[in-house]
Image 1 (cartoon, rainbow, N blue to C red):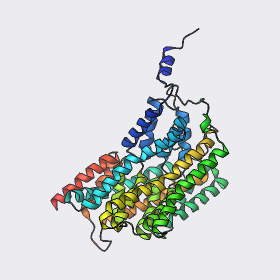
Image 2: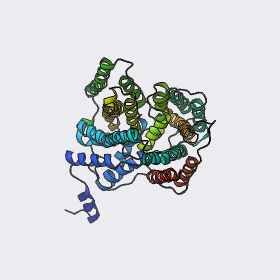
Image 3: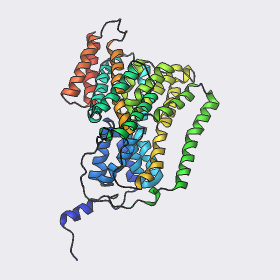
Image 4: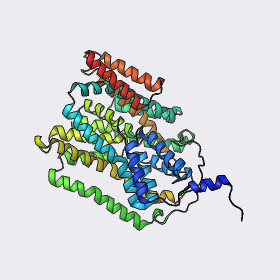
Amino acid sequence: MDEPPPSVAADNALCPSEVRFYQAFLFWLKLGLISFGGPAGQIAIMHQELVEKRRWISERRFLHALNYCMLLPGPEAQQLAIYIGWLLHRTWGGVVAGVLFVLPSLLILIALAWIYIAYGEVPLIAGIFYGIKPAVTAIVFQAAWRIGGKVLKNRWLWAIALTAFVGIFFFNLPFPLIVLGAGLAGYLGGRFVPRYFQPGGGHGAEQKCYGPALIDDDTPTPEHARFAWPRLARLLMVGAALWLLPMLALYWLFGWDGTLTQMGWFFTKAALLTFGGAYAVLPYVYQGAVSDFGWVTPGHMIDGLALGETTPGPLIMVVAFVAFIGAYVLEIFGPEQAFLAGTVAAMLVTWFTFLPSFLFILGGGPLVESTHGQLGFTAPLTGVTAAVVGVIVNLALFFGYHVLWPEGFDGALDWPSALIALGAALALFGLKLSVMKTLGLCALAGLLVQWLI
């Protein structure tokens, strides 16, 4: 019997025969601690580790799962982790992967939020935040530029983006209404001018082969990943209970108008509107948390985004910062229990924000696994993604206004902040520095300004 060539034998030797649960647990924990760089960086880490090095899953199956996650509201990188964890180790594998993806970020943000609110007036802390606030404005503009460059490929999509910007900037239209309108425009565009609403690609370029994988292109779908109506019905009942029981408890303890109850309801809605990533939903969070409920100030929002950029995990974790600050400042448990109130609020909001992601994957995954062909991107999603660009530009202008004119346009321009913002833009667009390096340099610049003043 002929032996396989040495290269094939070596490739087969690198392919694991199985992945034990503890091995997956350690990897997901590691990922939760090092997942800096936003969704693109997080997905790149998973691809490098799981597809190229460990070969737990093939390139095609990885991209197939990613395409589905990109169609969903919520953080696609976390959902991709849930999906792969679920494929490997059933429901508990997905749950562990998703929880460990956000748990380190939650704990870090609670600690940073407490330091921020308790010691924010200390010169050292104040100087750091003085420097990173202008950087956030440049970072958000970069996000709009990056997404727009991928999405706005023709005049129809430009028109949707411009309309979304006008709607939210000049008319203060609610974010859900903009999403609905953009989705309708995308649907009609797909019907009447379909060639202009074809998907532009997403994260994966051409597919490559890295050798055989544990979950390979032709690996049969495992039993637990096959679609079954009874299994879906059980999942929906469990998911409904996991959402309803905490909401009923909050209603019973604090009433419908209680701060924690309203936070739970508001961030549930936000979780269902995060098409296009965290930058897209931040204007909706701002409208609710700042304008409608008064949980935080515009300055808090800017600082929270800055902290979210410097911590691992999905950027949408900024909602935990918003909840912590709101509950802490409002002293919903009394002045002696401000830290406890903030911690409880941050944990509850994280629960309501990420619960839908688990249900989307555990419920929809079997449908996705029923076909391993290329998933079709919907025209409505293309329209929504185009609108996201206009919404992000509005967010950048909002941040720039509050940072550069802290006393309003009637006051003077904050020239040091303007220079730091300009430097951050040059670092990001010209020197192509990473977000983390840019924030670090701007923090040093803020300390220098504080020392000189």
